[in-house]
Length: 507
Image: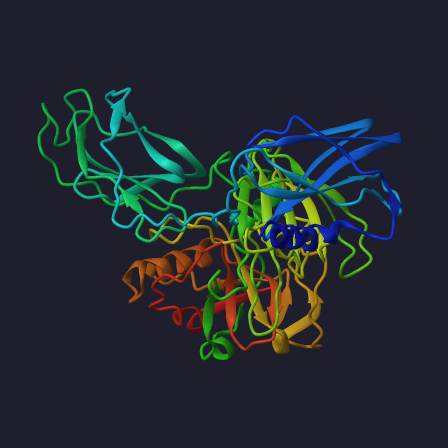
């Protein structure tokens, strides 16, 4: 059986081999039940790359600092398992220097190598969050904390008579803390914590009551019961709460400008959709804090691009869009929260463990969250991160607070470029067609969205299209209009057809 495993490993690692220069077999030392150290030397300063694998998995550890002495220590391996190992060193060399593949068996009794588990969703069903911790109680607010066994987002629902408001933090963590401020003194508030990451059902706590300090005028001790206040107006966009905080990205957080063209007669009969992961043409987003190493990608697979980035590895792997109907966009945005850079992929292919099957991709663009939302790999060169509907943003009618990223039928996409957003190009080819990448659509702002027969998710979309519009960024071979999302599956889409019945277009 050991021979069969080794054959699989050699086949998996062989993708790193080429007809390039050769290195001698690397030296192996410090073999334990969970790892070993691999060393080699080169005659000139080069980078350090070690490819290794067992079973059906492959991985790479990289160090891009140039050196002549190269050492890589592998940890967290299975005991008694044979791993295939191959060293590589280069510095924009063609060909790279590559060693033979050698087998290394960890100490201990034999184990069974299985691919790592996929990223969340967790499989716990119906599990909740334990009791909440309330601290820093004052007359105007308090802090609520809780923990989860895995990294999830943080959402706190609260209100005086019902859970009508939500404060969220979408950064994944196991320690969660939300601070509420601006509350009424001496008032009892209902609170409920929620944490999720593509979970169904989400993890929620029991509803608890917290009373702010002071006499106040609310329903707490010392106060006279009063009817709840009216719902607050839609929250204004405040600098620091935006994903792209720079004024250069105001197009993403403001209504379209100029003369409106009423296109309802054209769009009223069109189908509207959300591009979600279950369909395969979503725009996924993963985050990393930059502490998990990096993988060196280039982007000459499709075109003669020359980008060459070492992308910080997401802790749970790379999980791009998976395509469908014979196509695969391979979209993914990796956000490095430690630096504020994002890496926008096109045609990224991975194995069942979320590891790239090749570091040569169709397109790769690096941008800064401090920029204007370009570059990226929508057809307009705007990043899919700008306008992507993220998890949680359709959970309430006022949770979606930015313009949306819109896909239009190619048969209706002009060869011209709109000016409502920083579109750098278009893949539209139809002269005189209605839509232009870089233009914005807008749901009629005179309509009271709250009075419409529509789901909460659709009301969130309609409201966002009123306040900020939708930027045309890409096209499809289908006949429907759609929005890019980072959602695992579709929410209730009741009322989605209302969009096309009251729609304006701004070039």
